[in-house]
Length: 504
Image 1 (cartoon, rainbow, N blue to C red):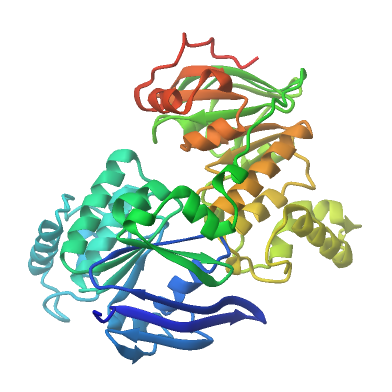
Image 2 (spheres, helix red, strand yellow; image 1 turned 120 degrees about the vertical axis):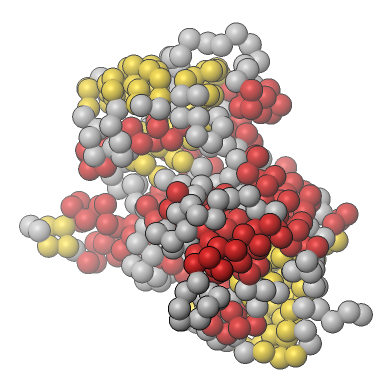
């Protein structure tokens, strides 16, 4: 048998008595693309942080090309040629693309040779087929370009193993194809890729093998031809995919809660929508088509024209504070940067918006705050059940539940979810869907902005498709099939005559 590039033997990791990895034994071959799947909280993030030196293992052994190695710091991983590209990967924004690619390995030593740096960066980019102006500032790059340049930096440093964490979560279809081409080039160079994704179709297309984690253990490793939705789901959560299906039974009531009248921005043409209590509106379209303008307007993040009314009262949504005061809760896609304080505890995060209600004469009632935090944790099923634990140690799915939990005390009239299950596993997806449906049952309006066709069909009562800043289709969910909604998203065609742009 060929010696694996990386082998883990009974690797364990504990946090304050919580067993996160319970004895992982797993190997990665040289030059393979290896999928890593599992529920949020199954141990994927902890495992890759051990491989990149962010965490030191509590016990166990890691072998590189058959020899034991110690990885206790990121510099250890760097020296061994192990690296990662995360969803929110960032470069030195004020540096050029070329500067970033050769950063830390600049030719010329102390006296920088700018010409040599540029030539070396261009040579690397040509070798891997990356067509980006080396003189561009990194701050001007798209999310896809940022990831590809980050990959080029790791290629320049001759990394042996590169971990890609949900690499297509924020990419369009053409950008995804470019990334896949780059990954294939890396494979041909003999670089091992660990590909972490919740998109099974990508794993099936790209990966030679896939390993599924469950509850801190390896649940199974599949060869490419064995990767199947039902098999993977069973290994992930010990339930079939059919058990995880969910659909909106029709929760809209008669009372209009949210009305947008001629709402427009510089990138969004005037639209008018009336949403009733309990109604879930799905909004989709190509990235950059204008969906994000609805989020920004309702969340008080950008200027808008027209009117926004809640319960028949016109509201001035000029800031996030005014949006909250009007009864609008925004649950953004980038929860770690926009919705949570990762170094504060889970309990502190979920109680922050409710401190006014939990205080008496200006003093915070710590006992009341603790009881409230505990009630949120229990109601939403956040795991582990540890309100005192720092938010950064929770999985993506449990972080998303915490973001939702922040708003439960305020009982918002309208909730705006942006890609609510981005980077969330199949088990947590079901739980988040049930939470969203429960908000609608309680009479709130819910807007789900998502690029997931399956998600929109599961949650929505009405679906709006946006192209070039305008609604191209606004129809009841029952008018769409999976294929017709996908076609409407791609080509701005509706399955029937386009309805008037009003949901009620």
